[in-house]
Length: 622
View 1 (tube, one colour):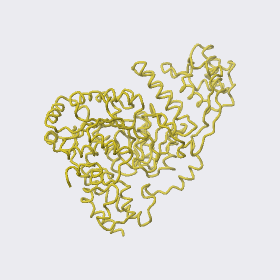
View 2 (spheres, one colour):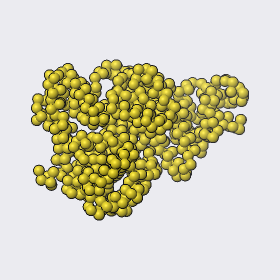
View 3 (cartoon, helix red, strand yellow):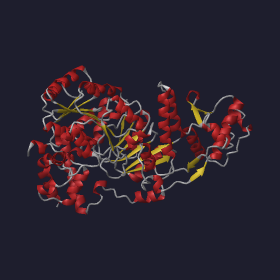
View 4 (cartoon, helix red, strand yellow):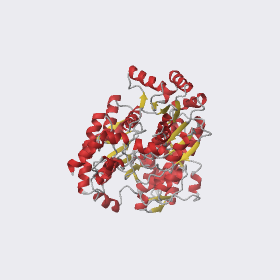
C-alpha cells in the first residue's frame, strides 16, 4: 500500500480500529485536521471524540509530519487510552508521574526523534519550560504534527470542571502557530464555548458541534423523600448486577452509600479525594476492570471514565448546573445500549447549591451566571414536559418529545400552586413583621398548616392571621412550592442565618397574583408501567439481549476468555473487545479469520493477535 493510501482516514478507520464507517461529523473533522486546520469539537460522551484526533495523528505521522501531543487531565485516562491504542497496533505513550526517570527519558527520546505517534501529557507538564523546549526542538525538525486538547471545558471559568492549568495552554498557539490545534469536549453551553475559543485563541478554528442527544439514556428525576431507600429500590428493580455510578455531594455521604449498598449485597466501592491515593486508585481499577461494580463517588470521579457498559448513573444530590449533570449522566451507556440517568432532589439541594454560590469568594458577575445555570437545572428537575427536549434546548438544540424519559412515559399530574405560594409568602412576611427575625422552611410550613408546635407557641405564631390557612396543602406540596419560589428568585435563603427564608423583590409579583406557580405532583415512586417492565427485565447482559441460547453461551465463553486476556495485559476488558463486538461474534459463530474481518471493532492488529483464539473459543462452545 502506498504511503498516501496508507494515510487515508477511511483506510485507517478500517485497518486500525476495525470500523467500516465514520459517525456523524467525524469524517469532516478528521479531513479538516489532517489538512492542517484548527478545530473546536463538541461531541457527546460516547460519540467517538478520541477517533477525531487519533486518526489525524496516525495519518499525519504516516505522512511524515511527526508526533501528536494530547493534553489530557487524568493519569488513569492516559493509561487506558494508550493501552487501547497499543491493542490496536498504534505506537503511543504517556508522560506522567507513574513512570520511572528511565522510562520517562526513553519516551522523551522517542518523542524527540518523531518515532511515536501520540504522546499524552497533563497541562501542568506541557507548559513547563523543559517540555516546551522539547516541543521547540521537535518543531524545528518538522516533527510536531498536532496538538489535541481533551476535556477543553476545563479552560473555562464558566465550565463545570475548571482547571486553571488549562489557561496556560495558550502558549501553544503563541509559539507554534503553524501546528494545528484541536480542542475537544463533551459539554459546553454558549458562554463556556465562547470562553474556550477566547482562552485557547481558537477564533479562526472551525467549530464542529454534534447533537447533544443521547437517545439510549432514559432520564428520570424524582422528588427526594428517603433517598437511600429510593436508590436501593431503583437499583434492585432496574439494575440488579449492573455497573453504575452514584454521585453524592459529600465524602461522608459517599462512604455511607457504599457501605449501605454493600450491606444489601450490591458490590459497591467509595471514591473521593479524601481517600488514600492507593485505595482510590485500587477502587477505580476494580470499577474499570470488573463487571457489576457500583461506584459511590463525589464528582472527583468520572472525567475520562471510558467504561462503555455503565448501565446507570444516579445522583443523590443535585449537581451545580446542567453541564455537570449532562457530563456525569453521559458516563452511562457509552456503548450505545440502554442506560438510565436517575436523580433524586429536594428543597435542601436547592438551599445548599444557592448557599455555595452566595458564599463563594467569586465576583458578583460570576455568581449571577452560576445562579442562572442552577436555575436552568431546577427548571429541568421541576419540568412536566419532555426532559430530553429541555436538556437539548439548554444547549441550543431543538428536538421533539423523546417518548423515553419519565415525563413522556408517565406524564405527571400538574397542580396550580399559586394560592399556596401566596399564602407561604404572606406567612413569611407576617412572621418577620411580628418577630423581627426570619425562620426556616419547616417552621413556616407548620404555621401555614396550623400545626401548634412548641416553637410555634414559643413565638406566639398561632395568633398570626395566616395560621392554618394552608391546612389543605401537604408538606410535599409546600416543599415543591418553596423549591420553585427559590428557583425563580421569588424567595431567598439566608445561609448566614441558619438557612432562614427571606422575601425578595421578586416576591411582590407572586403576592399580587401577577405570576402563576404551576407544579408537578409528587413523582417519588416509579410508574406502574415502569415497575412491570423492570420486573420482567431479563438479567442477561444488555449486549446479549437478542442472542439465541447457543449465541448467549458463546457470548459468555468469549467474555470469560476476554477477562483472562485483560488480566494478563492489566487492562480493562473493553479495551480488548467491546461487548458489542463479542455479541456480534457470538451471533455470527465465525469459522475463519475471513469471517471475523467484517465484524465491527476488529482491526488488523487485533485480528492477527486474537483471531485464532476467538475461533477456538467459538468452536469449543459450538
